[in-house]
Image (cartoon, rainbow, N blue to C red; front, side):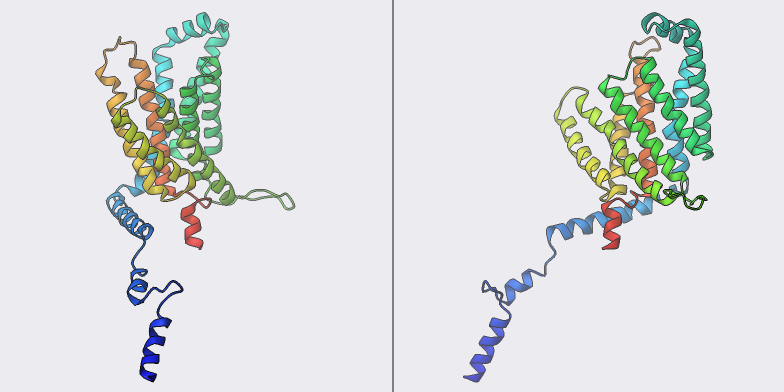
Length: 304
């Protein structure tokens, strides 16, 4: 009897409140679907880290160059189409002739000088401020401020510029005693968050533009998930790489301006879109290099 009671007590002790026996308890030790997904994504991240190791030292420079390439192309476009730009600003935007010349000259000078400073990583605050000022003044000057697609694309470009800014803030600066200031680490944290949010707005513009198809819906679905992961900072590096691949393929297939005749009416638009997407790809590459920052699930996971 004692042996029977002991055996029954052992079985009761190993069963839960719902009568689950040892076999069911063992089943609960199996990895959950979420754990399996985390394991697979970790393996993918390790694989991506391995194949990207040779180019990792060059990612910051490549990213900064790609971010400003749309401004360099725009400066070249203004210089090679100088008369056409003047006619458009004067005849269609009704801007006085002297101001049109000054407007174009200031834009070319600001884009060229600021882009060069971004690439060499000098005076980044002034360079980024100059490029953001160019985006705003061009939106006003060319009357594109109410164009939703233009608005979302340029917000994404600004997101890339904010990533440049946060990348340049790596050291704390001297602050006068008694004056409360946000140090470089804190500013980098918040600007990385703002940059992540703005970067993915290009994809929102992609959702609303173009004709619908099954393939496009599939790309949007994958891209939308990657965008959300970038914003919240969950597996942000992996998600940014997915967006880089999607945008790069889309850019080559859709904005292939080099296949169009030089007098084709959409050649300039395709070229403009091509270099703008390159700029956003550059911002995503900086995200891959720097990580999502402290305001993210990836960083919180390290803490907890």
